[in-house]
Image 1 (cartoon, rainbow, N blue to C red):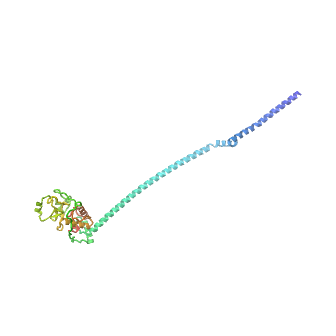
Image 2 (cartoon, rainbow, N blue to C red):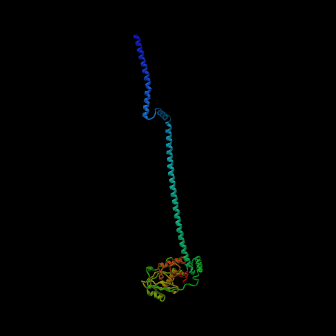
Image 3 (spheres, one colour):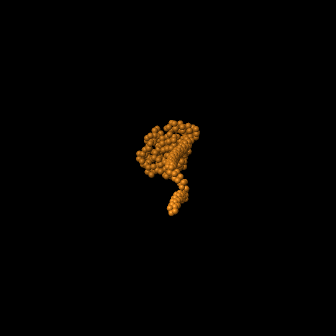
Length: 330
């Protein structure tokens, strides 16, 4: 009986032990499930999804990284290429603008220069036309340049204001007794002075200029040689010889002369009246714009020189026979 009870108790204990082990085995999966659930709750994702994500990341991780690198490199190259293209475009645009501006400025300067030259040529043509129109009043005589002689003669014939062999009649001008030395300053005496450039003036009508030289003599010397051929102009003595008036240097040591040289004795008029007639004729033709004062000062000599150059005469800058003939005076 005792053995039966002991056996029964042993079986009971074995059953209890086996049941405990089964319960323990059953409880372990539950605990693991609870632990996984706690982990899932902590990370905010299910354990299965996390594992799947980790697997995906592990298996395909290289692919996104390579794609990102390629995209970044492409974007970088595109950016660099865009910057280079933009810089190149702006550089070329700036160069083109500079070149266009330089070309425009050059063309503008050339255009302005051409316009200035046209205006200058137009002004010169107008002056020549005015002089040519005035030249129509001139009798074409005493010219050294045959071509200019023919041209001026044709102009004279066309205008018909001064017919050939009909010179202007001499006029008498009421002139001041005192010279205007501001407009015609006095010249200084130089012993033996000759007229500059006269050695180049060819022809008998210019011999008087080639041979002239300044001389100083006292009053008695002048009287003995040119007794009745001396006149006084602005208080200064002039002597007449071979169709010209000359300053009598030394006759009056303080005499005033505006010109040291011959003056053509047109119609035996005194020097101041000859000069006044020439000034009036040059005024009519637009060469002289000063006062008719009978003084052969710088302004008058300049007008005579301009007229002589335009009409093919030697530029004596004074009153000579060829110039008066050309003016229609003599």
